[in-house]
Amino acid sequence: MSPVLLFSLVIVYFLLLLVVAWFTSRNANNDSFFIGNRGSNWMLVAFGMIGTSLSGVTFVSVPGTVGIESFSYFQIIIGNLIGYAVVAYVLLPVYYRMNLTSIYNYLQNRLGFASYKAGASFFILSRILGATARLYLVVNILHATILQNFNLPFWVGALVILLMILLYTFEGGVKTIVWTDTLQTACMLIGLLVCVWYILNNLDLSLVEGAKALSEKGYSNIFVTDPSSKFFFLKQIVAGAFISITMTGMDQEMMQKNISVKTLKDSQKNMMTFAVIFMGVVLLFLFLGGLLHLFAEARGIEAKGDALFPTIALQYMPGAVSIIFIIALISALFPSADGAITALTSSFCIDILGIQRNPNLSEKQKKTTRQIVHLSFAVLFLLFVMVFKWMNNPSMIGLILKIAGYTYGPLLGLFAFGILTKRVVNDKLVPVIVVVAPILCFVLDKYQKQLFGDFQIGLELLFINGLITFLGLMLISGKEEAISLKGN
Image (tube, rainbow, N blue to C red):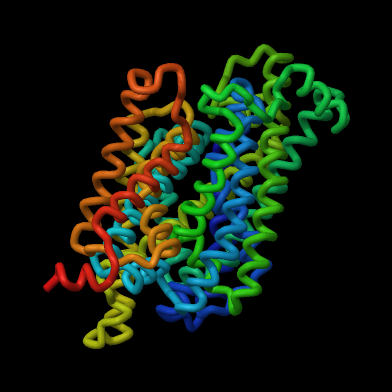
């Protein structure tokens, strides 16, 4: 496949995004950027969230894990469904009742100013690390398949892609992203379906025969019943529930789109519709992963992990399918990066700088500040992408979930404490608690073999982190009267 042709496709696709951005960002203001003027259509948000949640990591890494882990990843997705229900019927009513622009304002109203700043800071850290890890994976593939043929260094490709994202999100923000994510999700799913269809036909298998072939190889096994394994089904399901509660319900990027919907009822419909469709799409990605491994075995292909899907798509499929793969890959890249930069800009402007509540700033000054922050996060993204390039991790999905365990755990503890208890914390000590909890989790994870023997801690590290944070908050809390006396 000609690198010039592939690069031309990337440019055409980007120009299409610019056209969408131009239409959606006309007359945009700060409210458009932050919450889409609370006028987003719930069906568009639900469909677009699929692309944001899947990202390039799911597109590439999930199929690559099937050879080792079979369909066990689906255990997490079952847990996700439980978590999304909690988000829809526990967290969203709180956010709508308080009419929030940033969900971390809840922490200020319930726990205090220091708690609010701590929660927002952990979101910013979480989203920078997670989004740049996802961005690195796809940039790395695009560099290997297109950009290195033009003798361009890796950092140039990363910079160009970030500039593209900046151009179509700079004005419209969430108002634009709701529409571009819908377009990109559609392209990604079309690519997925075409690749499944091609491999089934190439292997001369029907859909049912393909499922049977995967079962015979053991690729389609979902449930792991060994309690000591980190993939034990109860661990994975519980972890999946808490992953979706934190990485969706306590994440400004995901909730920013949900609270841009007009009513709570529509937002809840959006969340549960997305949850059900998301399960089906991930199952199809796992099915594709199994087919890719069957194809690789039949052709003697040695590529594994994150390299498997790109290698087969670009070297062993017809040119037309390779083109569809590249378009789908780009479509998987942009939703996870554009939403992240927009959400980080929103959170930093609102939660850290406090520009929305500053009466001394004009709308023009607020907009200028927002744009400077937006550009700054793009620079930060470039730096972190280069760090991940240096690390060269073979499977990014495992790394991203590990990062989430450390960075989203404190958010889980903060929100759980606020919602499940009526106790008042010593707000000044909250930042200490949310820093100590991940450190303790790191020690548990590093020395788990010495501490627990054959029992393995996996994704439940997120729950443990949240629990330690929750217990720490209990230690520095009391009834309102007692806290007031201590404060005096």
